[in-house]
Length: 324
Ligand code: NAD
Image 1: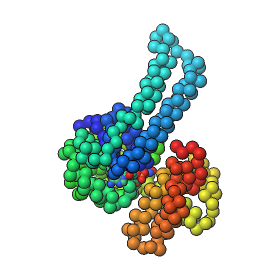
Image 2: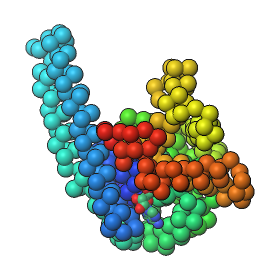
Image 3: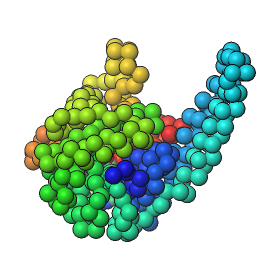
Image 4: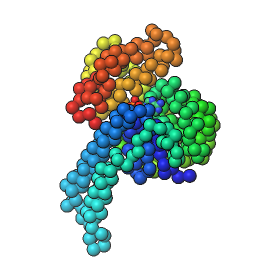
């Protein structure tokens, strides 16, 4: 089965990006979210993504125009390459303008998945929410539908039985800002079928992602096994008031040549997601004095309760005028 119809559950930071990229690559895309208010926010995210994609394509167009006169080729033997390039760019700009209206947004789960070849779940990183979502999804999705979780830190085996179709369940983990950070980690659990694995790898390639194939389950995949401890240690330094955010980020950037520091990354990921990860760890340990519990408390009080949830709202560890 080729995946043509995609449903994305959750129109938040990652759900909107996955939906937009898949629609850009020609798939038929539906977004499901819990209520109209959530979908309104989802629509705003799609409009913001259209602006970002338009800017990226415009950059290609202007940089091509700047360089084009330096490209020498035989126009008798080759068609006019300028026209081909510019036609492709203009078609892409037209497509991007239409995408926010082409993506269906619905609050009825059964209607959202009725044609779905693949459902990608991008609901909040809370075990109870995901459990209840998979129970409901398993009841209403057609037999053909593959389910994939975009969870950052939870294992597919945790939810596999609840789906009612463990062999058609897998984790597909995208990185934030997928139009440029175009990896997707593909991770099955013990019962995921080879066929499911192959189909989602093909899907990832079809939407211009680079599939990174994991052989076994690992909480946090490859990327977050490295990234989460890194971000957590920066939060510990901040919470202990060892240094201010800029100094913490400078230490990393100037010391290693990396383009971004950990707190800048947290602002882009979104503070709610980082809070959810810390809270999950704290709840698993069930120790209110644990480091994770302290970090979760700090993130809630200083950032979430004040509405400073990261770059998309213009304020997190830093203040932003460009919220993209
Ligand atoms: P988010 O908070 O931005 O969005 C979550 C969305 O899910 C919201 O639109 C919310 O209304 C919706 N939602 C809540 N309950 C729901 C339900 N029962 N059914 C359907 N939708 C529901 O979260 P996010 O950052 O997009 O993260 C979503 C998932 O993707 C999480 O599992 C997270 O770990 C993972 N992820 C996030 C990032 C990141 O950088 N933000 C990167 C990779 C993976």
